[in-house]
Image (cartoon, rainbow, N blue to C red):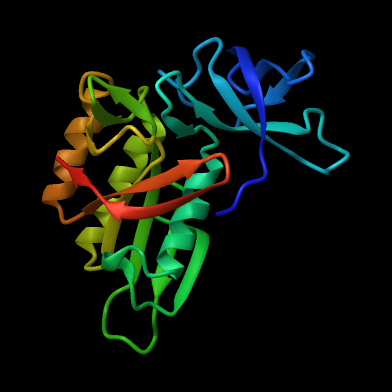
Length: 233
């Protein structure tokens, strides 16, 4: 995924969806933040912000925060909308070995008993294999050289695990795909110190047959792409 981004300096993030930045000309302006998480370690004052500009005249805040560049030169994609896009791109390009060979890919398909939408559904009427239900999660939390998910208590994530367990019990493939969008993360584990309920549910889900994959992204101000599998434990 190619990006056309401009550089700014972070002042602060606030109200979850907003941040103030200093542009190259010294102007302070407000930009949109497409991220509902805690963004721990991704939003420190004076971090470099890489932002995109929307041409939609109806948008109140035309600038969107896409990447953070930290003082030690880690790149982090903080726009969580990118995770599903990157997953779809990687599947279509055959990057994710475990998810190759399916002709049909659909996004945001309704499913489950808890009024959910699966991020990606793979199917192929010419194959004997079952449909593949894929829930994509963005990983950006780095602590003590270890990547973690989630970065905050996530009741929505807990619901998705329950839905995936039901899919697995029906004989279809259920996949939890961690899209690792922090260049400093080389392995992922569940953040039981943040959300113990999620951690316990994830163990239950794995035992029920839910597959867990983690793929790392290459990231810089010119583009992002999932490129290699890393360890989940």
